[in-house]
Each structure stands twice: as C-alpha cells, then as structure tokens.
Image (cartoon, rainbow, N blue to C red; front, side, top):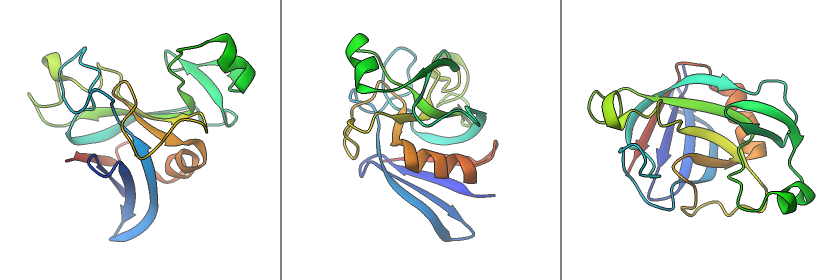
Length: 159
C-alpha cells in the first residue's frame, strides 16, 4: 500500500511505496492556516486515510459540486460566469481522520468537514496556502495520484 505525506510548511505532497518516491508535487492548503475545528476553513493535521475516491472516468477539468460532477468542464469562460466559485476539479480523494479527538469525530472530524485532495484550475497558485481547507493539486498531478492511491491509503498531514 502506498502512503501520502503532505508537508504543510513546504506545501508539498509526496507519494511513496516501500520507500520509493512515486510522485512529488506542489499543493495549496488553507489560506486560514492549520486547524481541525469544524467551520474554521483550516487544513487539518495528523493521520488520515483516503476514505472515498470520486470522479473516475470524468474528463480533466470536470467540475464537482457536492461531490457530484455537474456536467461542466472548467474553462476561463465558465470561471468568468462564476466569479468566486471554489473550483473542485477532475478528481476527489475524500479524507477521513484517524485520530480520535484530533481529526476524527465531534467538532474536529475531517470527513464531516468535507476535506479533500482535489484538482484546481491551472491558474491557481500552488506551493503557497490559498484553499478553504482542502489540499489543491494540479490536475495532471492529481490524475497520477488518483491512479496510485486506492481507498484506505494513509495520508499524513505534517507541519
């Protein structure tokens, strides 16, 4: 089983299996910083797993709302029609916390906070915080990650 490590300070995701680096990519985590509290718009820390994988077979740039493909594919024209929309594109890896009281259950439950690793428009800056709590990735990197990370893959979000 591979494992994912997200270095929150470096804004970098690494996927390894058996010590071998399979993927390294810049990401963007929460503009509001780190934290586990529901409603905080912060990126949670600690041990998680990929609980659900959403979007297999959807086109690159598929737009997701409420974890469902809207039938739209991202374009600059679509972006102009929906200013301020938080774009969730291409694929979703929905995370679930593993640490009771830290990122699982109650007011700190990552899964109930709808924290994902997901695609983002190519114009979105990566390598610097900017999301509403999720982990944003370039669509090409996300497609590779999705291919290599089955449900149950461990995900560590570390400072």
